Length: 628
Image (cartoon, rainbow, N blue to C red; front, side, top):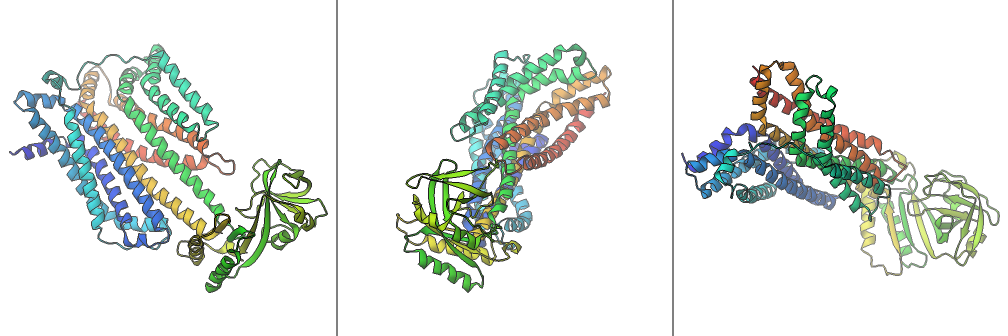
């Protein structure tokens, strides 16, 4: 038997332990490969939002690769710890350190090669479905299948390098251990877990501090909030949980009830041993849940980008010589594509105001021209009167007077107020009589060209629609102009902006869901491995207890509790963190952030539940054999 065959047989004989790890690695390879197929697809680069799509795919590739590296490194190091006894026996039989290193290296490379092969094969099979779904996400027609040489090369090179580097790094894990330490392996006597009441108190203080700072979450506090959450989560598993379990054990009535004594006695050890895993699972799951929730919230906000009032807005300084030239370009594009639009040109003066900080002032005659478009009636203002149009008024406050600062220094009583807004480029607006407008001296005077397309609400712009293409073409054309610094130049297309944001958001959701799935499956496989590591000891324990009367029903209850704690305690805390974190980051009263977060948590719970049922079934089938 050659040395390669010996390494292969070791992998094959430990297939039960390696199965979940191998499948998780293969799944990560598959997703990486599918995203690479998108990245190198010839039609993506030529699509309307091809650059955005490729950027998203590249980001996804980096995230998957970095996470896969950490996951594989962490998993292999844990696998090697369980095989120390085996390495000790090989050492006694005469194996040199170089032969052990070679064995470990070959085993890791064999597993890596099999994972890459499985990932590529499954990726080929399902790639057509992903191409259809991905194309729908970015608003394109179904992408045809092509033979992805570049995607195969990138995937193989990336993951072979990953497994090669990790195979080199793992050589240091058993390098300096003595034979006696190797023979003992993971069977060293465990000391009773202890917890410090000081560190337990610090856990509570860290969580309270994060909540307090989260009320004013901004660029200056986000780092402190993140650090406090990480510290609080880690100490909760290493200190506070052990402290709480010891407190529960002191409650004799609860501790001696049924099988509580059995699972509670082991719980403190398991919490302490698995603290790092619980911490990692909690943080990864909470980040994934929060990211999906925020994407769902943004998807609801994007609907407002589809402005049904003014679909094209072009703004310049009043003295800008490019004004008429660009207006003709817009009119020409609309005419060429047979789109009829009503054009309104208004002059806007920006001033400071103590009541509104900044306010845009327009004259009554300009407002009355387009008032019907924004759903308002024309106004008839007497001298010194005004009509106020607020862009956003979440507190629904009533403003009675508006004072214009600067050279004007004039106060205008507000005879009417609305929150409809004119355009997303014209914020809080004050309508005043034409005679008063001539007297006002603004800090900045702009000319806005507003284009309204009738029956726009019945249109549904996509990346392929003419409305979007016109908007994108005009944006690119105007951006090429060398406008002097002293002139402002601003163009907005409702269809182009809406479609681009929607496509980008859908792509983020498409990418994020599968990355989150990679995270969930990888974490579940690692939890399965931790159960498998303790399987031999658990079987001996259950065998001994079954002799004194433990029934199958009682043992199944204990197994359900132990595995349930392993899977669902970290998930519970990650769900709480996601609910709180999304509320802290997305500071808006206009949108419901609770419902999207609950949807994402439920989705992750379903994945976690499926993993729990599979792992419990595998674990229970092994433990049941130990019963007398």
